[in-house]
Length: 75
Image (cartoon, rainbow, N blue to C red; front, side, top):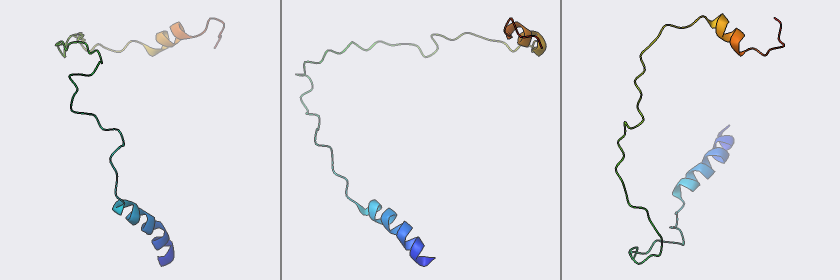
C-alpha cells in the first residue's frame, strides 16, 4: 500500500516543483506604433436590455402539453 501511494504521490510532488518558463512571444512595450486597428471604447449601460417581469400564476400544464404535441399523436 505504501508503494502504491509513493507511485501516485511522487509525480504530483515533482510536477509542483517543476519550473515554468515564460512563453517565447512577449508583447513589446511599443504598442502605440502597432498597425492594429482598434475601435474606440464606448460606454454601455449594464441595464440596457432590462425588461421588468412580474411573477404570474402557472398555467394549466395539460393545455400547454397538448398545444406542443405533434398533430398525429393520439394519446
